[in-house]
Image 1 (tube, rainbow, N blue to C red):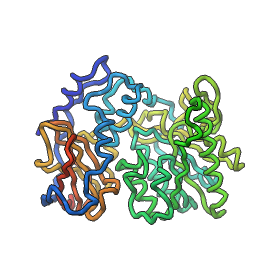
Image 2: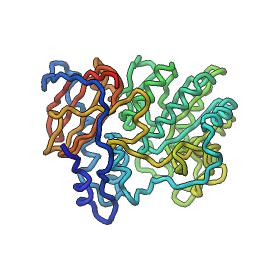
Image 3: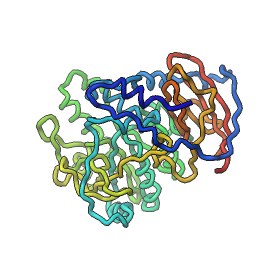
Length: 410
């Protein structure tokens, strides 16, 4: 099949919000050894019933780009496009307010920014790093941070994204759960959690958003209460942690600010500032959300003009995304190869979601990869070597069609 969504998308969007998808990308798929066996459409195992989040993904990712990106539907659409593997479509949207800007580098691009971060991370017990929810590449960088800094004593990982009702240290999970949090149910986040489990980090959920006593309060007061609860929970965790261990905290956007920043016209102290005050610790705070690197690699950057003085200790600038086979280059990490979706799982008429999991993992495990395909599209999955279960979900249908896929060496 030919990829036709570029023209469809361009014709469906008004006000110049979208540039049509370029079709000049290399469409070749890695020549790896792949075998697959078709599995029954309806399985006896209850755990392979169609999961509820599939319909939620179809609902939040609009068939046509919402005209108002600042509306609730528009923001959900932009945040969820990367969660369904469509960073290519996300990158084509003009006018999206959460786009980072070019900032001046503070180094010569030769030094790995992790070296400088390590110097500072060894001098504190708490490292706070943020992400943009619609930039999974930020999670890949946090994965590198976690792996590099475990020997420094970073043994606890607290994530704002974890849903406290479904993710617990005492549950004995061996894989990240699709209901572990809205953003946890994304392959890069799932890979991040798997790494923390492999490195034997202690995982901690600290956010409490939907508190009944907050209902009906002005938005500013709701945010104030949320920031205070987050800081309280993390301060309690730090108090319980062994003195020779350190904490890595994963937040979004403003929660990493060490100084009050403006919120609806007035300064507001966010979680990091409150945590420092409560504990007497000076956390190392890192921003990934505001700056674009002027080079092909990640670099340390001067603060964005949007930053308040002292807002963060370090700023990480990521290069603009580049794509191969409609997938971002950064997802082609070592051991990952592009694998064609079997033709009988494609559709010329409906949108589909195709997910890949390690063979033997249940449907509530965050998939290794996920791709949403519009009618007529064929875009490769990105998979490691091994046996996988590939599940196809059709929009508006309750059926699940599956294949067993054995991915060999390149």
